[in-house]
Length: 143
Image (cartoon, rainbow, N blue to C red; front, side, top):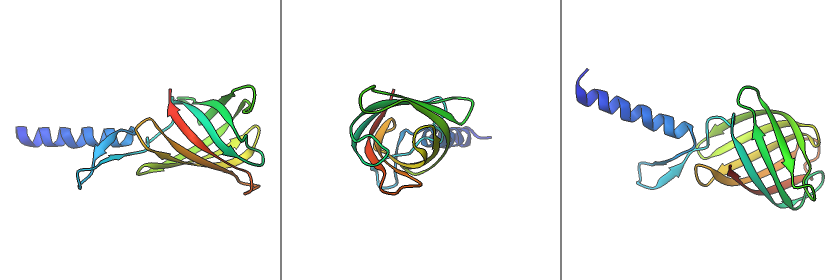
């Protein structure tokens, strides 16, 4: 393989790896774009609730940690507004957005729609599957 071909291949490989890890990349128009991570496994996020209704807290903070070897998460609430929970999750991503479907010990089934504004932070909206009037929104930052 010629040297130029090797370095081109290396650059493309590194670019693809950075896209899947939630880092910023430059798009064709020269504007920085953010990709949602390809996985949540092993990551921990600090979440700030901005609004909520129904089964969800309307204010407060919590930390959510995703195990690295199983599709299981745990949350630790602030002890005042948001409580602790745990459950199973399925995550998928496309572009700067992701979807986290959860089966939670407190709220049962819910779907989180997340948008990454940077490689490590963004916004979310969650809706309880059984009660569309139960919603919550806020921000998150990777710890």
